[in-house]
Length: 160
Image (cartoon, rainbow, N blue to C red):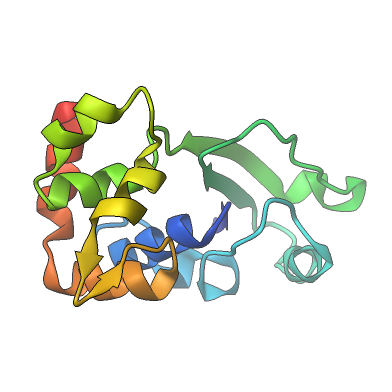
């Protein structure tokens, strides 16, 4: 079984790669199609080629991660038999909540959550080494290289 992890955006990609680097993801890179997660919403032609090249008895489990999962996955007819299953994981509330919690700003955010999304709150109030929060892979990776991702995720789960 191979896994095809489709990620919606930069934030999801950064978090999944961090989780992989820290051994927090139960899927190893060797189990993934093309050895990595893909920042795509659909199975594009390059991924279709990789699926077609798999041995005849090898199946693919698709995992989609994003904050909106309403788009339907389009699977070409000639590779449908290769798809074992599709799972979707929604990141609502947004991943920025993990950063907000890590910074100890959960209570402050609760006071303004009806007016601001977590991303806006984080961009306005959170800095790391003098740089305001951005949902770029670089910022997130830099931030969580110095802050404990595991503790932040546990606290996130406890509070949500």
